[in-house]
Each structure stands twice: as structure tokens, then as C-alpha cells.
Length: 500
View 1 (cartoon, rainbow, N blue to C red):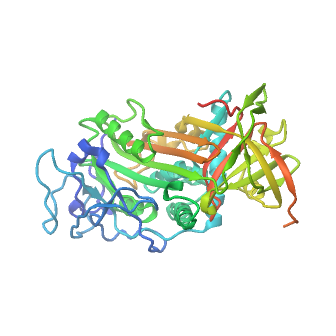
View 2 (cartoon, helix red, strand yellow):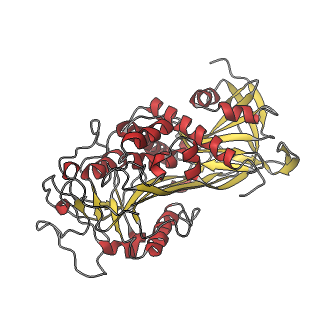
View 3 (spheres, rainbow, N blue to C red):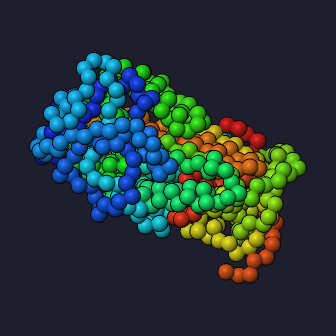
């Protein structure tokens, strides 16, 4: 497999603007993310100047604010490739030599962009998520339950898209239902704004304690020390997703880096996802790793009461499942082919919608799932008393195969992938691994859910009437923040008693 040579000068800038220490790989658990500015940025990234970030933060999502350190460096010219091993700029702090140097971060120029259009975000994430869920179930038809995070998957693919060109970029655009880096960044920024609003609403609700609502989306990038990256790519990551990159040493100790990155994910998902990257998924040829982690823990706006075990029709047999019952009716809609109820969490900034196809119609409704159906299912025409099973879904998806089935193919083929927006020439880089895990647990008190996605880049209004909805057959569910309605989690349950 070919290794990268020096990037052409046309799209690169000197590393003098960055300080990225190889020793950070030894303590990857301490890696930090850039904080996100609420300032709006017009259109795309400003690629004229790059600098080391002024604040390294513990997380890149709207729920994270703790500063961990500061660094500054003077900007330089835009004619040389970025190298993470270049010496520190004379105007900035010089790191202590040796393997004990603390981890440092590098970030492109530009404030985090403002939120995009809520309706566009909802449509793109919903349609992409529905496509992905169908393909995931198609790969494993025998799976009782399936869960994914459209938000997490979309984010990592979009992060890779920021450095893709040509056919590789077009394939990702088509699958994500949003064309171009700016449009995809707008989707994620819109949802992030909705998440921030949901957290604020929950904090204002005096019925709940502070821990009654936690939503933490975080992004991180690790770059091989000495690897040459175009500043335009780092600018795009900073502006569109608020991301800093951390130093890594995949070449010297890929297993240690794999464990460190997995530990980083575990910490940010409350240990619900202890191992995102399996053995050998990171190797000495890895030059870049992109990760999104998403954690949610939310109490219901009105807790359920414990119900009696009831029959659940799996499609193949009848089983007895524990149930819970709403104490107060919730909004929903009763239809011919399906019925749905939307159940709010504390503060009403996040809600779970449960879509229950008519008996025998599960496959047809899943096949028709799209943004239009999401919108119709979120209608509040009726008041529903809901009885539903407690359930827990743990799913590890073959995300690479699903992405290929969605038409994203070239990025996974060495020689065909065009990631020259990151570094090198078309064909030099490709995505060697694309992994995704999701965990969703729902009970009378609320929901705990986590998801993580990783990619390695290698060289090579009618009057309401009270009705009853009994969820006693296969159903589809999603969790969305209510400002955009875009799904954070999406799943299908045919056996609520199956835990994995």
C-alpha cells in the first residue's frame, strides 16, 4: 500500500500554525475537544488563517463547557503542508521534550457556524436514518431488535465528506440527503441547537433534579503525528462541527491508541459502549480516526406506572412481556395502517415517538418510513392512554456494509476513494473501518441511550378524543429533540424481551 508523499502546495499551509504533540497518543484518554461557539459563520470555513485553539475542552457538543487548558500560536503563510511534528512557533509556548509531554490539540480557523434550518435537518436525518435502519435489518433479518443513531452516523460520514471530492463526495451527499459540506454542517448545527434548548428547558423544570436530563454529543479526531493535513479540512471541521484534532501515534503503537480511543468513547457514553473499535481495526497504516459519541439520559415528563405482564405478538409467536402505562394521556394519532404516540421527556424539549403498525403491516410501514411519515406520526390529533413494554436494545451494526448498500462505496476502496481534501492525491487515502454501536434502555422512569460511530482513514387539529394504544406487536421508535424533530435514536422492536 502506498504511503503519502508531500501534499501539493495548492491546498496546504505550513504547520507553523499548529502544535500537535506525538506523545498525546500515550494518554489518549485525556484527549479534549474544542468548545463550540454560538457565533454564526457565513457559508463555509475561512481557510486563510489557522491557529492552535485557544481553549481545549472536554467535549465538543452543546452539553460540554469545562476548559482544560489554553494554547496560542501565531498564524503563518498558506503555502506549506501542515505537519504535526513541526517545531512549536516561537511566539507560542514550547513543549517540554520527551515522551511525557502533555496532549495538545490543533484546530482550524473559524468560529462554529450558527444553526441551520430545522426542517431541512429533520428531513435529511430522518430519511438517512430510515434508509440506514432498513438496510441494517436487511443485513440481519433474524435480529429481534435493531437500534441506530442517525445523528451519530450522519456526523461521522459528514466529517469524512468534508475532505472528500468527486465521486466519493457525491456518493456521501446522496446517502446523507444533504449536498455539500455546508449543508451537512447546517444539519448537525441545527440539531445541536435543539439539544441545547432541550437541556435548558429541562433545567427550568422545577419538578426534576439536574441529573434528570443529560444529552452529550461529542466529536473527536485523532491524527497521526507527522501526517500532512490540509488546513482547509481542519477549518471545515472547526466551523461545521466545532472539532479539534489530537495527536496520535498509530504507526508506533496502534493497539495502545485503539484502547485509548475506546476508553474515550466509554467515558463519554457512561460505559454503555466500552469497545467501539474491535481488535485490528486500527493498525500502523491508520493516519486519521473520526469519532462521534452520543449519550442521553432523560426522565419522562410524566413517569409511567408499572403494568401487568401482557402478551406481545412477535410475528412468529406470542410472548409475555413486562409493561408500563401512562398515568396521563399523551398526544398521538390513530390511523388505519398504524397508530402513534409521542411521549415527552422532562422539559418537553425531547420526546420519544412510538409508531405501531397494524398487525401484519410492520414490514410495509418500515419500508415506507420517511420524513413525511415521521411528520404524520408526530401529529397530536388524539389523546392516547399508552400501554407499552419495557425494552432494551443493544446493537452493533456492520456500518461499512450498510453504507455500501446505501451507495457509499468509493470511500472504502483504496485507489478509488478521493479524500484529497484531507491530504495527498485522489486514491492515497481510504476509509478502512466504519463502525457503529447503539444502546437504548426504556423503563417507567425514562430512557438511557448511547451511540458511537467511528471511522478510520488509512493510507493506503381535530378535537382530541381519548383513545387507547396498546403496543403489543412489533413497533418502530425514535427519540428526537423537538425543535427540529430530527431523530437522535431510531429503532425497531419485534421482541421487547430480547436484550441484545
